[in-house]
Structures are given as C-alpha cells and as structure tokens.
Length: 257
Image: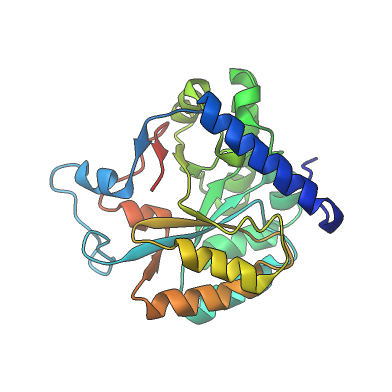
C-alpha cells in the first residue's frame, strides 16, 4: 500500500525530499540521457505530419499539465475544471488503491480525452528494485488500466523521478517512455492553494511539463488560477504526446524539458 504524508508529516517529508534531491545531485546515481520535446519533434519520421486540428508546438507556446498518483476523491472536481476550460492533461495513475479503487474515474479520464499514463503499482522507488520488481510495478498498472479503458499506457513516470539503465531497459521492453517535469509545486508539502499556484506560475516555460498531484486537498483548487493566468501569458495546454508531436515518445527513453 502506498504511503502519502499526512498534514502533520508534511514538514518532515519536505525535509527528506530536499535531502534526497541533494544526495542525488551530488551522487549522480540517477543520471540518464535526457531528451526534450524539441528532440522528439526533430526526430519524427520523414513524412510524419500533425493531425489537421492539432496544435503545432514547434510554433506555439505549449505547456503540458500532468497529475500524479491519482485518481482520488479530488479528481472529479479537477475533471470538471479541465472540461470547463477545454484543457486536456496527462494523468500518471497509481495502481494500488487508486486505479483499482476508482475504475469509473479512470474511464472518465480516458473518455474525456486526457492521456492515461503509468505511475507504477505501489509507488516503490524503481531504482531500489531488480528488473523483475520494476517489471511487476509497471506491468500490474498497465494491465489494470487496459482492463478498464481497453488501452495500455505508452508513458510512465518513475516515482520521485528516479530512473537508471535497468529501469529504462524494462520500460523499453514494456513499450513505455519515461516522462519527467520542469515545474513542480511540491504540493506534498503544503495545502496552500495560492502558494501552489505561485510556484507553478514562477516556473512555467514553453515546452514545459507541470507536475501536480490530484491527491492533495490544496492542489485541485489551484488549477483554475494556473490555467487562467498561463492562458493570459499565451500558453496553450496540451497532453504530453501532443507536446512531442509529430514525434513520438520512444519506449525506454527519458523525456525532460
């Protein structure tokens, strides 16, 4: 069963996350070849073209809104907001106690045009597992999503963004590209919706990927303001596949703005 910090544990969680981030930077133990949305577009197969009604992110200031670790009881309100704003997002879903608990929400996410992606089964740190462990974490969610929607995800996000050659190889075998982010509100550390909004607005950039969680009380109320203000700045919201089009995310590769 995945663990998420209660309000009383958020300060400790934030401190641990900061320490872990520093350790990773110093140790370089999660180094990987980074590919951008522009790289994907430039590597599109000869003759590949955008759909007639698709946004051309090579010419438009695009940004992708993504949500991790749901769905949850907060997701219906989020979906209502996205529908009202005519924004499609990418949802990296968690299998245990989320996908299996909310199949109707998984189906609704897919039916309303959002990208359904994989965030593992139980939020284990994949770099701590052997190949079979990584495979199980990803495959169980793949199968659960396919059972509900009829389609297997092609994108995944490793918990805490931790990946390595072993994780990349298993992802390649399973047909999953790895998607990181450029903007995060660290919404696991606060329920202050105004602060969550400010953090995202301060980090927003063209070809960016926003990381939020639809499992925390303060996150979903921040989304309308984020969308409104970024639209006023000239951003167009797209899913991750739309951000890369006409290129396609290649299994095993890591995409990070």
